[in-house]
Length: 524
Image 1 (cartoon, rainbow, N blue to C red):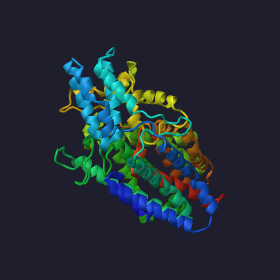
Image 2 (tube, helix red, strand yellow; image 1 turned 90 degrees about the vertical axis):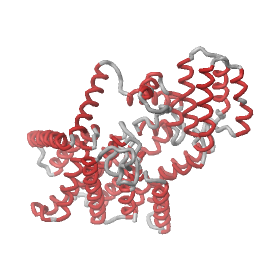
Image 3 (spheres, helix red, strand yellow; image 1 turned 60 degrees about the horizontal axis):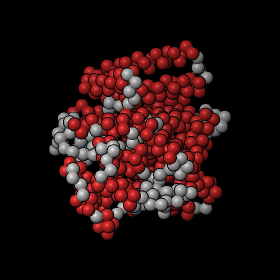
Image 4 (cartoon, rainbow, N blue to C red; image 1 turned 120 degrees about the vertical axis):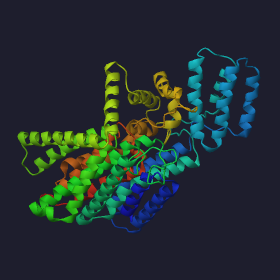
């Protein structure tokens, strides 16, 4: 049931098709949890595995009852009396500037309070950037509104930016997507079943890769076209691939599938020797590997392409060491072959879609030139701002899903200037907010603090300790895919896509279980 769900989610805009898919995930996970705890077998182990998740839920519950900011209701707006400030202002430009933004904030406060606050703090920065020494009526209005929306949250316990129904639902969604791996770990004890599940996952990702390649080669930009299967649109049509709205998230997803597929192939070779080529499943796995390898650079993901090449080198090292045939000469041969393969792949992708390769090359050159001239890329500037944000509340953080709301308060002038460059060429006005820091690790530390990081450390410990200790090569390959995901999360935000987070959790749960149930002295 859960594996079917995982496959469906990957096709449903990678889990972003709408609330219906998220509620379906929650329902299936809840049913699975109830099924788990009906049985009294291994109840201690189940409680132990769920404990960190339970502590995160406790952290969230405490923060939910201790918000740092509030939303002004109608009586609050009446009490603020904005018109009073406008009547005392003589600068028409300031009146127009402030009145427009407060009109938007008032409307958004009712439906999207997080966005309303983010827009206000961004506007506050922009206003005082333009009028640094202004102390007139408009400045007083801005400072007064800022004062009114702030609450005296208890700093001794966790807090949230805002507390509302939407935040609670988003937290439940995220917990459900994480729990799938723990449930599978507890439910499955048969190695053959785990291999079959890995096979289903690998073939599914291979088919998605083929679909993505077909889309990429036949895509023609159109304002009327729904990019993903003609059903769903994407925020930025240039960056979607297959069922995913963002190419880097596809790459994170595909790399986990690549490691799983390669693990199954190597494991099959160990089991059947040269006759492994006669198995139909291995042919399907080989086709999946081929389609995934083509899809990652074709998607335009530079980070995905680099990690794919490094993965092949490290997996070659692991395989040679595992079969006790490792030598520096053999590793060099494998590495040279991988780089030659990468060159051939580059030439092939360039031939079938030159535009994507040219864009990747030009972006890389532009960033290299910026760094050479002492100018940091936008992502690094975002991380710099985020580190300052973390330092202001290092213990508990600002609460779940607070980054996009709180970020404008800590956003540097350099970032604001870079984000507004696009405004000059825009066809319509918009507020250049930052939705994510492109670093899941720093973003989650800013939300849950060092306490939250310590809570999840046991899970990270078991991933790495089992990766180095297990006698199972398939388990190693699966855990390596999970580690690649964790590495990817330092430079992007793949956990924000449900399909990626669910596959990561599934991979960890099943790879760990496969290692635990494998013979300790036999290669498996």
